[in-house]
Each structure stands twice: as structure tokens, then as C-alpha cells.
Image (cartoon, rainbow, N blue to C red):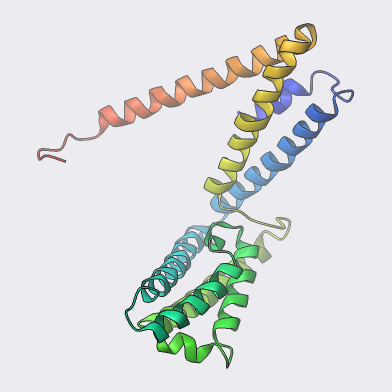
Length: 231
């Protein structure tokens, strides 16, 4: 869909429209990143194993957050206060770092582990129930994930930064839905002779893709075996 929209927009000269020109450039950039992420995800046999290892790291990070969060509510004020200090450290490294691109995720995770193992912070971590083991798990899974990631990066050296396709797909979708389409819709109200046709073509293409996607989803649902028990 994004590639087709790029193609439709390239048929005319939009350089006089600074906003639309910026959106077109941004769409090309994000769509290129999406193509690269798909190539990365499908390009090698080891990429599936990499995704599995990344999922483990993500679970360990989320588990670490949950354990620290649980310690915040202990009746022992000293432990709860230590948990609050540790939580602030995690927060300063991005509570959603597991959703970032691999390079950025690794950098932030390494920095977080380093800070949690600092001689002044480590006693706080060790005072919390179950948290030390979660840090150990995160450290080990991150090391394994990074080793495999670096090996694959050598195989695909021309890909500078890799983002999970599911995440990058949302970036492209949001750019189209939240920025490009609303802008074209407003532009049509002001200059219909210039923008109406391109707006129509793009929206018809999107609707056609969505119709096919809904039909495919319905077909798959109908092909699934029916459950014999209440779900």
C-alpha cells in the first residue's frame, strides 16, 4: 500500500507544497525502513532464532519491571523506598525500550544493567524480592541476543538499523492515517482542482487493499476448525 501511494504521488510535482513534500519524503523513509526490516526478518535462517531470542529479552525486561513494581507495594517502607529508587532508574532508560529498534534497545539495556550493577545501586536491587534474579536473567538473555544479532548484522551489513516489521508497519500506517490522509482531505477543501484526484486515487487504493485483507481474514476464520467447547 505504501509503495503504491509513493508511486501515485510521484506522478505529479508537489515541490510547491512544502507540507506534502515533507510527508512524501517521510513516507519514503519509513517505507524503506519497513522494506529493510522485512528483508532482515526473512533474509536468513538465523533471523527466526534472533526474533525468538529478542522475545525472551523482552519478557525478561517486562518481568523485571513487574517485580520492581510489586516491591513498591510492600508494607516494609525501606524495601518500598528502595523499589522506588530502582524504578526511577528503569524509567530513565525508557520503560518501553523493548519496543525500540534492536540497536537502540541493546544500547539502553546495557546502560540499564550497568547502572543496576553499580556499587551504590546493587544493594538496593538485592534488597528487593526476586529482582536480582530478574537482572541476571536480563543480562544473560541480552548477551545471547546481541551475539546472534551482531552475527546477522555482518551478513546484512548494508542494513544500518533494524526494527521489527510489526513495529515499523505501525509507523508507516500511522504516517498515512494520521498525517497524509488528513492533510489531503483538508487540501481538497481549499484547492479541489489540485488535490481531489490524488486524494480519490489513494483512498480508493487503500479501500481496495482493506477489502482484500478483510476477505482474507474472513476466509481464514472460516477455514479454522470449530471449537467443540465453550470459548
